Structure formats: C-alpha cells, structure tokens
Length: 302
Image (cartoon, rainbow, N blue to C red; front, side, top):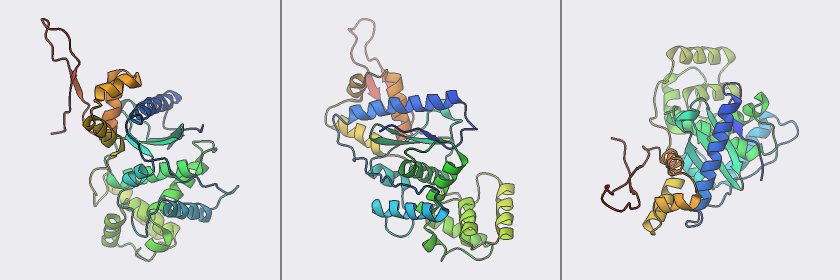
C-alpha cells in the first residue's frame, strides 16, 4: 500500500538526500523480495492503529499501549526493540554512508515495512528510541503528511510510552534529581537519560525547574551522556535469511543475480543489514584460465 516516507527531520536534509534514501530503500526491498523466493520471512504483522482527528497525548499513549498488546509485549522493558520489530515482519537496517545526514526514516514498501537508522549513532539507547519512533510512524501515520512538527511529536510520544509505559515507569522515577536512580533506570529500561528526564517531566514526577536543571546539566556534559549502554542494537532478519539461503545451497551470488541488482549495490545492502564490513568478491582465475564465478568471502571486523 502506498505511503509517504517519514524522516526524523525534513529541515536537516535536502530533497536530494531524502530521494537517495528512499531509492536505497527500493533497492533493499528488491533484495528482500528476492530472498523471499527461498525463505519465508516473518509476515508483516505490525498493527495499524487509527488516530483520532485531533489526538491528545493520552490518545497517543493509548495507541502505544495497544501496539504493545498487539505485539505480545509483556509489562516491563522491551529487551530488544529491533528483534521485536523484526519478529513482526519489519526489516531493520542501517543507512549507507552516503546518507549520514539522514537521521532515520521509515517507509512501507509494498506490504513490507522498513526502518532505517543512522550508523553514526552507535548508541544503544538512541538506536532503541529511533526504532520505536519509526515504529510509531508505521503504526499510526499511513496517510499523514510526513515531516510536520505535530507528526514527529506524535511519534516521539509513541516511542516514550512504547518503551516506558507511564503507569509502570512512574512508580520507579525519583521525585527529585537523583542521578544514581536515573542511571539505574537507564540500564533497566534501555533509554537515554534525556528521555527519562523528559518522561519524568511529562508524567509529573519532575517539576519544571528540576526538568530544566537536569536537561541543562546533560547538555553541558555533551555526548556521549553518562552510563553508556554500549553499541546500538543490531538487526538480524536479512542476515539470517541470506545465511539460511546459503545453507540450503543458494549462494549470495545467486540471490544477487536473480534480483537483477549490481553486485556492489546488493553487497552494500547486505553490509547495512549485518552491520559488518562489506563482502569482498574475488575472481579466483588468472589470465591463463577460463574465468569462473567470483568467490565470496566475508570479512569480519577485527
């Protein structure tokens, strides 16, 4: 079904950069549909939930809770956001280096939802929130005009409730600025300190003065913020599907050939799906021998 691509910030990117990102998504979709000739991927079961005409924050929070319920998420933190989305048929990938100014974006390609994240954000808390934010667009904004402040704020509120349900996290939030308590909550809920401080303010745990003081202190500290959770969550769906193809006798070269994509493009897609270095194609023949199919080697990060 047709829909517009949602970008985190239209002002931060040019139309050309957005067009390039959407075009890359079409290349990904082409490789994914080729893989689906050999491997049955999880069906796209991401819920589509309608917004009221003029939704309030409470309406957005209710939709986020309904989305958790529809996806079978129990109470408490979501252990791995990318895995949850992939289990419901969402293809999660990194953007290529050429799109580093694109923060994140999501789009329905045919009946398959795709989420792209910025590889420069090598931060677990931020990658989780970005994925939840884009999931909010996919769940709520099929027909919404992308890029507006209202739509982006709705996706932000969705992500906050999706990752930190208000009724649960409010009981754990400190009533004063207690960084040790916030560090513990960051580790437990897998969200940034800024997101927790914002959440504490939105839920009434922090007064305006406390909120502003906390945000000022975090701003002065800069990035990365304290209590780093480690590298961003890695996607698995496309990598595992390609490996399964290879295990059943369908090589990566065969997949590329059937897709009709140039090897370099397909290789770049696979690299963004695995968060590893691209594969290297080597021609094993020398000048005296008849050319043979290229040997595919996987180079892993040292």
